[in-house]
Image (cartoon, rainbow, N blue to C red; front, side, top):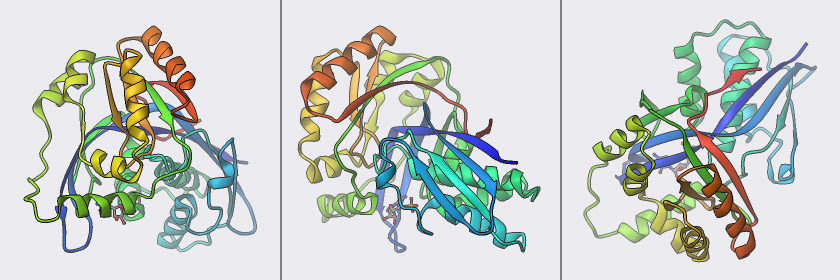
Length: 297
Ligand code: C5P
């Protein structure tokens, strides 16, 4: 008996970042869009909690209690007074430490899978509360689609999407640490007035209309200067995709994955081929959005 859950990656189509709060987190206006690159999390009864991972980047995934999938299982079991006895296997396809919420996806996936395996009968609100404890991006991995996240990004309101968007994701060599990128944001903005983050009306309208050109104009990522400061070579990747005809290019979340919006599938393929040929990234992946949230297979 086992349960498998499929969970999507995300791109932030808007990431407005406020000043650091007293708790070190930053208030955000964070418009998440789920994209069709997926991890699959399978849980099977076992004598103790164990994590395994497969996929090309599996060696970079921690298999100890720091893995969000392990933390999700422990949190759920703790709330229900049971032992977290499960073998969690992650079939990893989302870039690791890439700014696409791969770790968060595994946390949300393990939570939903363990809930089904152990018949804990947790409510959706309880699962969302555990997700928010696990990390700022984890609730969105559970719900998918598109959503505006405020607070540290965990307080979600669904956002309507009126069409399919085509993306190319350029996977960089190595990851970037999210806390390090936020620290660099603090360093770059020190002594300046950081405006209160607010969702862009133009961006929400573009999503609602399914309008690629309007979305291209409205994309923004407040962490991009910090990611570029830590990894200047990402500017070459962004330029390669733009030269190849991408409608827009930006760093995905805290990076170092870069995201390219394309007019259609043919254009996405052209941009992906050009990125691969440019030598400025390790891999280029094509995906569409929106995508559903964590789903039992
Ligand atoms: O919530 P999560 O564990 O994913 O956050 C990872 C790190 O990213 C935090 O420790 C913090 O340094 C930074 N962060 C932040 N403000 C947010 C979300 C994350 O400063 N809203």
